[in-house]
Image (cartoon, rainbow, N blue to C red; front, side, top):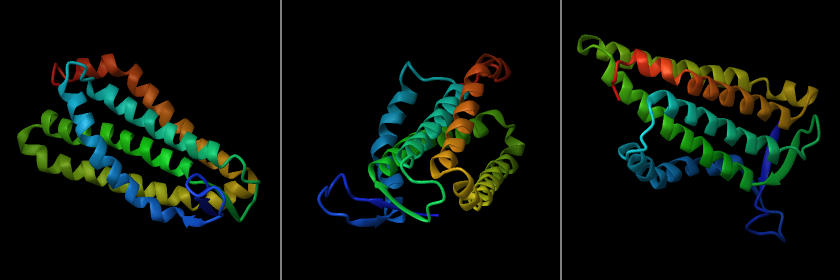
Length: 187
C-alpha cells in the first residue's frame, strides 16, 4: 500500500503530492531542537527513574502511531493509494523522536552504569544487537502491511503499533518500584 501525504495544510488550494520519505529529515531536526530540553529535564530535580523514562518513551511512541492511525482513518479498506494530510506524519515524527530521546540515551547510560567494568564492551554489543534485531523485526512485520490493509484497514495497521508500545510503556511504569529496588540506588 502506498500512501501519498498531501501538503494540504501548507497549500490548501492545491493538491501537491509529497512522498512520505521526504520527511525523514524531521527526526534529525526534532532531535536537534528537543535534545537540549530533554537534557535539562534529566538534569533537573524532576529527573525520573530509568523505568519511568522507558515507559514515557514507549507511550510517546504509541501516541505517534496513534496519530498515524487517526490520520489514515479516512483511507478505505484495501486502497492501493491514498492521500491524507501531512500533519499526521509530522506529529508522528515528533512523538517518535520524543520517545527516542527518552529511551535511547537512557538505555546507553544505564548499560554503562549497571554493567561490571570487565563486561561493558560485551553489553554494549548486546545493546546494539538488540537494536538490530528490533529493526529487523520491524521490517519483517512491515511486510504484512498489504495483507492487513486488504483485510482490515490502514488505520488498523497503525492501531496495532499504537496499542503494543503504549501497553509496554504502562508495564514499565508499573514495574518502576521493582526496577528501582533492583538497581540498588543507581540513578
